[in-house]
Amino acid sequence: MAPTGMHLYFGATPNNQLIMKVAQGCKLVLVVGFAYTFLSFMKRSSFSRLGLLLAGFWLGPPVSLLAQTFSTPATVLLRPAAVFDGESLHSGWVVVVTGDKITAAGPASQITAPAGTRSLELPGLTLLPGLIEGHSHLLLHPYNETSWNDQVLTESQALRVARATAHAQKTLLAGFTTARDLGSEGAGFADVGLKQAINQGIIPGPRLLVATLALVATGSYGPKLSVDVNAPQGAQEADGVDGIVRAVREQIGKGADIIKVYADYRWGQGEPSRPTFSQEELNLIVQTARAAGRPVVAHASTPEGMRRATLAGVETIEHGDNGTPEIFKLMKQRGVALCPTVAAGDAVSQYQGWRKGTTPEPERIQQKRISMQAARKAGVDLVVGGDVGVFTHGDNVREMEQLVQDHGLPPLDVLRAATSGNARIFHLPDRGSIRPGLLADLVAVAGDPTRDVKALRQVKLVMKGGVLYAQP
Ligand SMILES: [Zn+2]
Image (tube, rainbow, N blue to C red; front, side, top):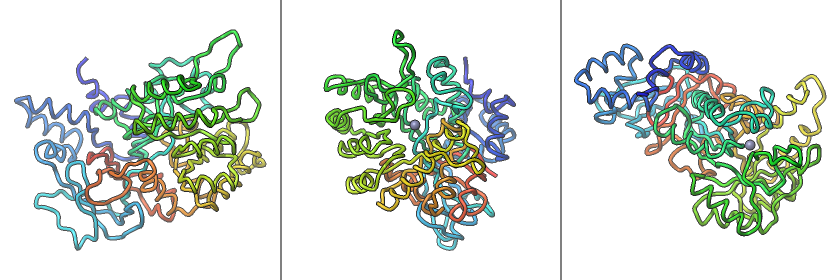
C-alpha cells in the first residue's frame, strides 16, 4: 500500500486524535518522515507548488518552513522566555536552528540570525534540550493492564509492535527525544525494527538506543510455567564461555546498541533476588561487548549482583534497590552510574495494593529511600530512567517528579541528569545540551522546570532534528 503515513497524519483518524490528546492541546504540526515522503512526492509532481500550498493550508506555517528545509536548510529563531541549556537557566536567550542542528544560542542582543530567518515566539516558555529517557520498554505496557507474564506469553508480536508505535509517539510528545530502551521482554528483535521505523520517518518517536533481547542465566528468568513446558522467555538464556560469547555477538549482529544483563533475579516466585551469572561470566559479557564498542548495563538489586556487575565493568546498574554504602562507594570508584527507576518500584507497589499517601509505605519503598540516600552520599552518578512500560508511556516525567518529591533531589539536578547527564553517560555528545553544533532536539514547556519539574508536564513544543512535532 502507498504511504500509509499520509492517513495517519493528514486525516482525522483516531490516531491523529490520540496524538492531539497526548500533546495536551499542543498543535500537531508535522512528522518528519511523512513530511519528507510527502515532499519527495511533491518534488516529483508537477503540482508541487499547489501541493505545498495545500499542505500549508492543512497543517499551518511549519510546513512551508520544512519546504525551505528541503531545498536549502531553513533557519528558525526560537524566542522563549528562558533557555535551560542542559546546565543552567538563562533568561532572555534565543536559539537559532538551521536544518537539523542548533547553530547559535545566547542572549538575544548578541545573536544575529541570517536574513529570511523565521521567528518562533515562545512567550512564557522555557526551552530546554529534548529529554532523555534512561530506561524504557516500549514493547511493554502497564502491568495493571496486563501482567508481564501474560504480555510475554499471550500477546502476539504484531500486537506488541502496534502498541509500541503508539508508545513511541507518546514518548516523543511528552518531550523525550531520546530513549534507552532496555529489553524487548520476549518481543525478539522488534526494538531494532521500531528504531528503524522511527529513523526512516515511518512513525514518530524518540531516537532509540536498543538492547534487544537482554541476557539471563538459564533458569533464572521467566515466565515460569509447569516444569513440563518450555515457556518462551522474556530474555535470552546464555551460560558459560561459548554460550555467552555467542549470545552477545548475536545480539550485536542483529542491532543491539547496548548489552543488558540480568546480574541477579529471583530464581523462584516469592523468593528474594540472588546473583545469577558468575563473576567470570559477567567479565566475559563486558569483554565481548566492549570489543564491539557496546556498553553493558546490568539489572541488579542485590549487593552481590551489583558488586559483580561493577567489577565486571558495566556502565550503569539498573534499579539497585538493596545497594549498600560499600557497593555505592565501589560504583563511584569504578565510574558506574545508577539508574534507580524509582517510579517503577512505586508503581508496582501500588499495583500490589499500596495506596500512596494513605496506607503505610511497603518495606520495599522504605528500603529504596535508604539506598537512594546511600547512593547520593557516595556521590554515584544518577541516570534518569523510570522503567516506563511498567507504568504508562508518555508519563515518563513521573520518575523526575518522584526523585524530587520522594527522594529530595533538587529539581535542577534532576533536570541536568535527564539532559546533559544522561547524554554524557550514554556517550551521546551530539545532544543533551543547547549549544551550536548539537542536534536540534528541543522542548519548550510552560513555567520554569529548574524550580518545579512539574512544569515538564506542560510540553508546548517538541522539535527533533529541527522538525517540529508540536508547537504552541
Ligand atoms: Zn526494565
